[in-house]
Image (cartoon, rainbow, N blue to C red; front, side, top):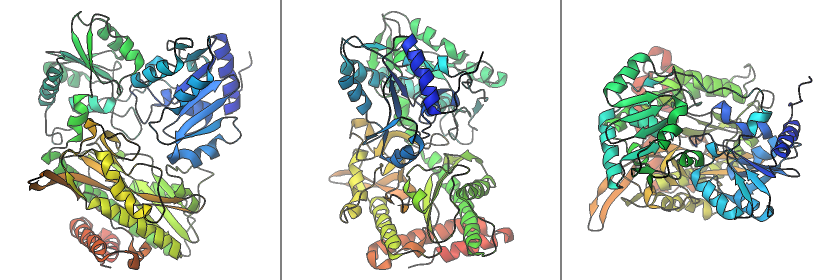
Length: 607
């Protein structure tokens, strides 16, 4: 029997459409999601990427017999246009990653009697409800089939990396303390049970980590917390026997991953179950026994893990010194390499490799926190660009190199973007860079009432750009985990986020500040630091917070047009650089690091 051709998106879509016809499906939705609604997906659930060839982390594929389209936001438009070219798949532009315009399209396109299908195991409950409402009673929504299984013969298996403890020196609260706090939160909602599917919530709650998802130290699991005991549903063999015994002695049972649905179906009639409709799938909700009362609210752990304790903040500060020292070593090497006329060609991939190697030499390093973005000139204008062998740029000639990178350390998670000049840069380069710097400084210096909704802060960063008729197509800031996901909520400094109660800014939250300017086909500029919410005092008008900048790495003043900076902005930059120099110099004082120390002193000089 001849093996079907699956070498191109067009051939894969042809087989997918045949499978759809066999199951009488008129439209199929393939979201970028797994049963835990993760941002970064295990290979098994990267069906949208496998079918379409579009590798961005956000996007929804919809396929009918005569149409195929990927809906994605402005961060990925350039990338999607390139990767979808020639595939027969249309790029559908949406304003933000949270948009559900594909649901509107289906509601307008589907006709009575037709059937829309999506795997309910990976369909978010909130989106399922919107989909049901948009389709109405005359269009059938099927959630009981995984059509990919019929057309993806070499589909990857479930990941099998072991689960391990986050070393006791780092979490400031024990499992028992976190479970007690969670049960208090459950009781506030009148709930005796709580189901959790989001992997970072589970890792946080149980002080466990894993390696099932690239860049995020989490493991595939569901959790069910009851009045006395909790259960973690994880694949057999992933939890070592000694750790399993420890968990069980602390009131945490370990059960097979595929038993989570049965446990929900077996909840006692009359029990009250708390679940988060934005952090659970339709399939998981369907498993809940009919006699169970359901209360819907945000996972209490989502807010708890966003508020780092003083001890955790201290660990993060120490990590920032290690990360900053690694960056100094890397950037000093980069400057020397670019200045060497006899050097071998340096590609964007080579930049990534050298930067990762510098971090790997630092104490406590575990892995990158996301795929490094090293984009030279036009590639820097692609917001989530990732270099691939054969299409990567060589860093030579003149222009700007944007590097967005981060590390996972035992004591915290980092995320930083810097832009450096290569060869000669223009007045236009310096103008754009300085405008972005002014935007970053404006938000970094902000003082605001405790509890202000984080999306409301977004315009502070955009104002210097708006004044020049410039904007950027992504959020200004995202939450960052504590040796957890580099993107976490509930706070989000973004004009596309809703200012809901759970987005309130509270002490201990770590958030990025990363405005940018992107000129397609020319260059991209983004400057990013991580900041910590800290008290700023109490006035007759209430309690106020400010940002403490955590990231420690020089901002390249060779790209700054000093005449465009106000004196107070220049003072902020000089103060920041003085702090960077004081905090990082002790880590670079060894003889082997002398070039990095000299580079640090040069790059932190006052302007």
